[in-house]
Image (cartoon, rainbow, N blue to C red; front, side, top):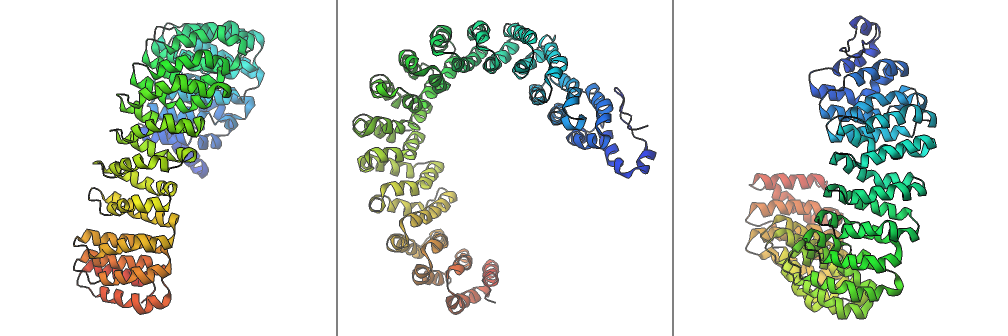
Length: 604
């Protein structure tokens, strides 16, 4: 009877049963597919597991489906991953929180498999359903599972256990809490580096749920041990835990309990550990407060900025602005000028471009912290050196962050050196670099103002319209013009841009003549009806007689694009005759696009 979901057997379904209840037939198929040889069918069935469970009802899901799943967890990783995810959402399908412990056996098996992503997903689902256990069920069912995993023979089960201590600790009795702390201690000194790594990665999280007395008595000693582990992969995870632990301790305990270990990590022989310290530096600074920052972190930060490994210097350079912002206000300027700025000056001419690029992305932010006079005297020479850097990314990072300097000192101060750098980027051999500066131009134009733009950058924008290196750049340059008109207005466009665009209509190169049409398409909407009708439309009409078919069919496409801007009288008396002429062109493409334009504009 039923689906034959007996552990160890292949699920089967009586076809007679299916005939008598058509609604269950698809479920029978899904259950059969759970054991199909085709992995895709098994995966499909696992993903519809909730449908099967709904059809079976809560009791049969508990007594038949879950034992069957638990017993048959030998499959492809992708199937197991889908199963681990599904089971995390199964609480209501087994009868609600009262029966949620029924989900533990299959998830326990999944938490011990070899593939890391499957184990991680099983742990994620176990953490999720732990909250649905009552305190009693947590002690009777969940906590024993954690103990079994923690003392398992295989390292896979012990690594999974590390992620489960923190979710059950707050809700169990003090006796069980003591056992959990002991298990965690044991795993922190496990023989297998993978287990110690898992313990180190969860140390900060576990510390947050412990009582303060145990943070001091247990966690600190574990942190100290893990931070001096023989494996650098363990030590670097201990750094992250150290930052979390620092946020939990009273100020007076930090110096004695945490700082010696963190100081040691900042000078670790492995660059990966020092990198982690640099990467977490802002979090650490907030956790330890102003006094320790002044006495301990400033010298440590200086050392990281001067580190022999480029990766560490780049990570520290990334934090320069944030570190300076969070310095105590009464001594901020002195610390920056005396201790940080000399290191920053060295990094501007670093041998590694990633370091210079990381610094360039944040250095402009120092101007708002140091104010106008310091910026002009000390920072401006650094910005200008970076604008002339041989690495395009460094130059671009500076240009991209100009707005904050503009607020402090005004753009005129920068303009003399800024411009050559922009021109250089605009003419860079790599088309992606040219594209990046084109896309940045409207923002730059807004910062510089219309007069400065017309005087210095207008000709550059026009030159991009005939960029031979990339069609993307021509398209971006056309879009760039449209954004500039939106910023500076139609009158500016009529006097400055439109005449230059229309002048390209007579260019001997047909690609440049086509660019005129692309620009007219983009500009018509932002320039409005009057400028389009009076200045641009006559040029489009004239180009309908072009000798090159590609130009003529683009005339048809342009008329279709700008048609909505024009009034109906103009459409009927001027546009329609031109399109009708193109509709009888000898070239098939010209005909096609002309007829399409007539149809779209309802001129037939």
